[in-house]
Image 1: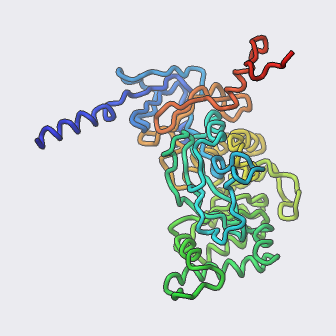
Image 2: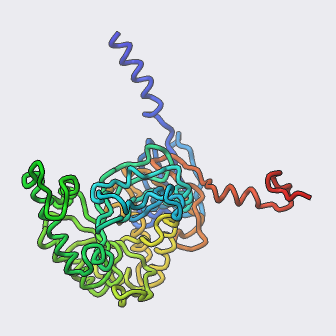
Image 3: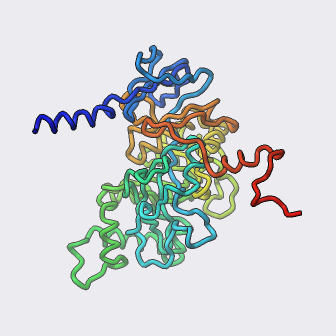
Length: 421
């Protein structure tokens, strides 16, 4: 009986273990590794992983995809996104980005609000985005809760990590939320860190912390202990120096800076502190006092100084995550090298969020692969195929369906849309 059961289990496992390999051949392969760009390359994927990247002939039993004249790259990784958290921003029932009426903020999880059926997911996927770092917004105070990692497959198992990082807003927004000044912000933050450090020892049955409840202190403790990174939004150069000072005071904490519009002014300090930044290369107009020194050359200057730079747009992260491709192209047009700009929307965000198996094409990497009809940083280029975990995904969205439905105006309009005589 035991032998029979083992044989049955082996037979059931056999199809997955011997899935047909896919060989993408003849393309311009961007590896994002020391191998650089491989002309006329062959990328072999199987069972969700990259098997090899070379100029060799494909395996005899592989399904061959002809990519001659095309670009083959890792999938794009959105370092900051709210896709799947809000279907309609102006409708409260369809918007889960923030919880302004909740007493809990640090304890919140973006993963609990994520909807893989959100129309923004396929819209992102068909533009080559295969991974998302999801995060809510602070509803009260400075913390926006735990951020999560997800893929854009649109399946119910697309979440990978519920507690990938914690999000907080400093600068103008943080000051306004903690008493009205940056002095109040840093005093409040110091008290919150002390509360988290003292949990649970300093919390009796009825005792609360100086500024945090028991539950909120428990949620912040893994961040203070350095187990989970803290992503901090800040822009002004003096605020960035304060964050560097925070890391020195709290060496266990792992920090990521979002925004950094004036980051170029303290680029050497950020590089020395080894704090990665996520920037919007198009932040240029000084529309508020904390970004008076914003410049289109920010990303390039930071990268040249040795700062680890990822690219995203926090201000348009709900429905237009797909624009990271264009943002990277603009960074490349304003001083950032092409390699660094493309890495900033693939390998670098994956590394920042602890996924060294993503954002690269090399043996053993997760097979998120995109075949493009041209240079992916060119505005008119688009994907011909998108693979997530080695599985080719749909390039159909609600918008493409509407486009196709009304593409030929000579056809009879569906009855529901005809005008009555």
